[in-house]
Image (cartoon, rainbow, N blue to C red; front, side, top):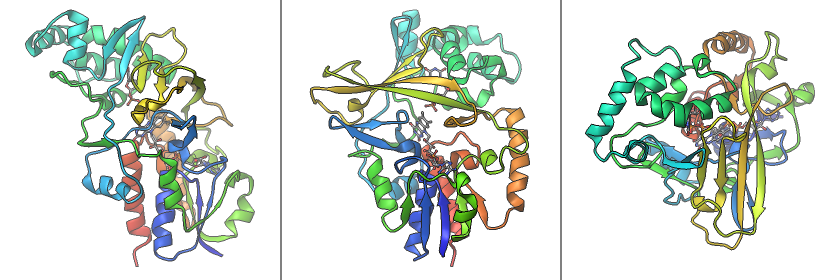
Length: 365
Ligand code: FAD
Ligand code: UDP
């Protein structure tokens, strides 16, 4: 008999497994994929650590979370400075003086502010949707060139139907600074992410290629408690209908080229290009090997059976999620956590925080 059955070997499940094992509790981790690590998983190809489920750049403002992760890895000094390609023209991201100067041929923050203030004056009230939020932050030119096309293909919905919060993830700066994030701690784990998970799961038993939902009765009987980090609606057999997600397809290519795009991430911000971004993995680790591996990221509408990568946290889905949360509360000895278990657009630092908070409550002596 195990103390815990942990469904999913992503960050939430693996952190819980690590903390529980430290207290000599017996854990069984079941993972439906053929590897551990969830969406953070990296695979070594041609001596390059390939982020198989999209670019994963670790960052946080919380020194405790940074220190916690440093138990398992050493971070390099990578700073994410992606480029936008709009119909062949190149712009810096996030929206900063380099972007404004290229767009309007201006030099000073004052000039940029004047242009943006004039454009954003059309939004008079509190933004109700992503379009209004974007225009009120950066004006209409940037909205049209760098936001609208990218966002509508990423989410498969009009910007008028999307919540303002999605675009508030991006900084707007009146300085020449291409760092995509504001957090003071940022980097890529040297040697890739998978090593972190190997260490976290060292003391646990792990069953790969095992879908909990297909072996529910048998697996349930093996443990006193269950930590479920898959999609909460899938656990309840979509009883109230499914929550909405965005899915993705990644096309990975090995190239006989040393340097394909000169930067780790290029976003294609027009609507017509079918992928949203191309990742060139070697640039995460400053490698100079003769080959390169790139990945194109194609957004897809999610249907049952596909990977649910992004929760769609609009009002309609939040209402439905609350109904599932009520069901979850009635279940005995089962806890839901992580991006899919909590149906939240969590970054790694948020998941780590949520997992550690949960450990504090669940594993107190
Ligand atoms: P997951 O990593 O999704 O792990 C859940 C695991 O459960 C999966 O391995 C899944 O296969 C397994 N599972 C699900 N259902 C079952 C079942 N029924 N039976 C058995 N196993 C099951 N965050 C950042 O901080 N920086 C970034 O740059 C970044 N980039 C991202 C890019 C993309 C394209 C995506 C999709 C996410 C990105 N994230 C990023 C977010 C990050 O991936 C998540 O915050 C984090 O990985 C979530 O961890 P988790 O454990 O909640 O979920
Ligand atoms: N976004 C955009 N243009 C870009 C990059 C991002 O409009 O070039 C918008 C888009 O709506 C995206 C959101 O900003 O979903 C958040 O971007 P982020 O890079 O944080 O997305 P993630 O890496 O989570 O997919």
